[in-house]
Image (cartoon, rainbow, N blue to C red; front, side, top):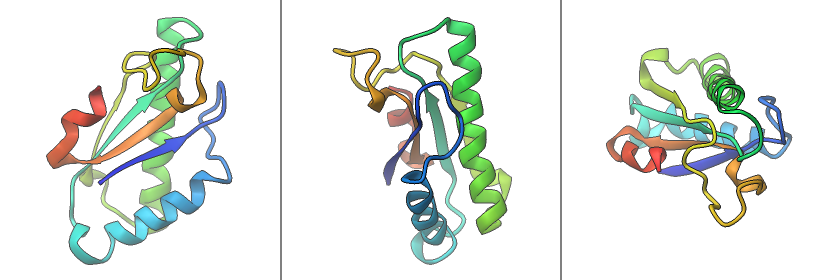
Length: 117
């Protein structure tokens, strides 16, 4: 499982396009093969802004996704491993300001090394 939840520029609020993705994920994590899975949440920003600011923003994005899944699907907090990477690990290195860099990457913990790249 590898899913990206996108965020608007300078925001840690869920977008209208993110909620359906998180609802599908929540259903998958509470039924079927993924019940009890440990999920890695890796937060990222684009390349604009200071390192400190982007680190905090990436952590807030991770917290937004984690809180949504805990509150709406009652997934135990212990099922999450979370990290913010700030502007490290750009998805689109050719364009550091590209929208696809502003994301929380969600990965089954068995494949968590993917989320830190």
